[in-house]
Image (cartoon, rainbow, N blue to C red; front, side):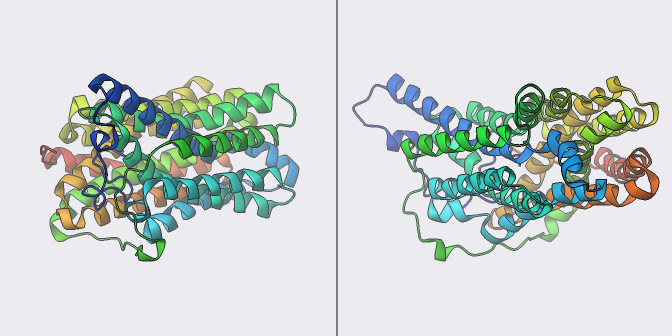
Length: 430
């Protein structure tokens, strides 16, 4: 879901580095440098817009879950399982074809991702029973799994020479900004437009179709693409020299993604049931704030540095978890908003720093597999704790289940932060 610009993303980029075309290779040699740069940034931004559209679809249902509960009459456990099915789709793609765009090319992989996104929207548009929601979330996970690494690499490869830093910002903003725009768009349409369970997905389907047209106009950046049959599953790997860094980094990633998962899956129900906030636009905005704050946290890593960002991210996550606990205990909207902002910043700091740390520590031959392993841990954080909250919500209540979740996450994050303070990760040049 998040990439730090190492060129590998969620499993793409390492093998393609030698085969990816530079912007200068793609441009006509007779063009003026300013013309090449302008065209390169236009292509980079268009690819970023396609990236944002796909990621927006993965969070589009978030503020609509209370409406689905009313329509189909299911419990909080079902809400959390529907939400977590998305993570299973992402993990499956990362393990089986996470490096597909290195082999077949960026554009074919992204077209497949847009196809899954469109199929997901159709499932939600057709939802007449609970099974449609499961199918829609699974297809959404497949789309995100294909896009996360491939689109990040594509955005950076389309940028003009010397634009790596700005291209990283475009990719980060497209990824997390798209995730934030999904609940915001759905909430606004559900609250102020007709057909709240239809119009958001119809709009997204139209945006996906427009994105496919845009992608048709963009060039391929992988030289000598090979058939899909040559793609091989990438097994998770953890060489011995990476383990000392990987364990605390993976714990921080797990907690950050778990906080996001629980917050985005059950916060609309909490806002409506306990705070009497029935405005879907407000619910969508609160969730969107967490993703926008994560973008800010990721961008701060460049200034703070990886060595300091990882323990700092753990500390900020600690504060975000306490804010969420206060919100659950006191039923205060201001604490929910604070938890979204602080937790989002902490998640962004911790995960981008974790990604950089394990990428730097991993041997070049195993870097892609190590990064894929980190993503698998992170997306496990989105799924299993969320389902755990759903299991506890029926016997304990949503607030008490949330407090149990927070206590468990605190027990994980505190030792990880202490370890990172005693043994800070080494910071190496890229």
